Image 1 (cartoon, helix red, strand yellow):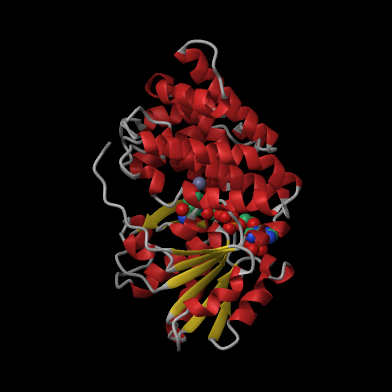
Image 2 (image 1 turned 90 degrees about the vertical axis):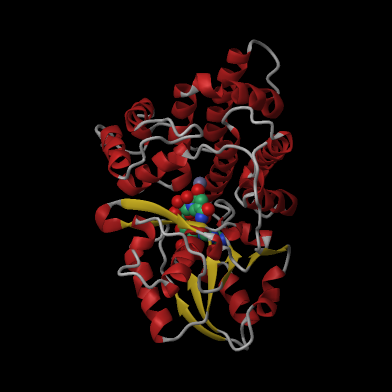
Length: 386
Ligand code: NZQ
Ligand code: ZN
């Protein structure tokens, strides 16, 4: 196991009726900017619950943060933070609203020339404006990590940022919010969380026995609850396990002391930036090709995953590893998630070359757990995903 230091300061307030507890978490005399997305919270009652809980707090609102939060829209919110001397941010939404809020937390205290530099120059935020979240969509784990991904429409870019100053102070997780999530977003959430675990697990045996079993247990739980959540998003047992699995998949715990891959996410973000494909679906497009292309390097972990998660007992290591990839593809298909780029766009020709060029121009010359996957190899993987 590799050496590590681990600190996750986010307080989780989990369970039925937990939105009521919001006021206890906001500092007295805070001037709050409440940030939300396209309006789902106004239809499903979450907005009313939040407003009720904050009835004694000074709150200004900013709605309209789109899925794949956009830089241009966030700059409008940044203006409000400055002109209104906002002291606390509250994200009420899914990964997009929470990520947008993280960008604002960083940008509010950033003294550089342009807030875009936080993304383009990969500036680590040590201290941000404090914020909390009310999670409305389990998927990304953003509610308990310090990363964010921001899109710039005019240049079709989607870049990551983060730093220890960008953990939410608290996150409220009431699984009852899942009742109103459309099936497409439920499937996305399951697929995203599942792939988060894979990115931190599907590398090479690294002696992280406990980390492996944490990872496998999250995958098993997601497989078990997925059909129940899709069938009945008011099933509390299924949805509470779904929600907690998504958080645990990307709050840093399973990544400690072991290598991580993350190349699937890096390629996937480009597909969202270029075609607007939902984040989770881009992962389902890239993952099978990535695992087939890197089969030799990953086959031991693929076979272990096949045995322990999918109960594949027959055949050689190669047979089990291959069958595990097939099982993963079937799982995505059962969720209604297509796994080929051509199923999302007719304009896929040339995509692999564009992505490869972008990786080269950003200096991403070796990605994956061995930092050895070159832009040319990335190009081949994306082509395999057409
Ligand atoms: O905008 P509204 O109207 O709220 O509707 C949203 C949105 O259309 C809707 N929704 C959310 N909660 C709902 C609901 N609809 C009904 N009832 C509810 N309770 O769902 C739609 C999608 O929301 P979004 O926040 O975009 O989804 P998700 O949570 O999947 O977030 C995706 C974003 O997170 C980034 C992705 O790249 C993408 O930009 N990620 C962030 C990560 C992180 N910070 O750690 C890691 C991930 O790998 C990912 O990259
Ligand atoms: Zn993801």
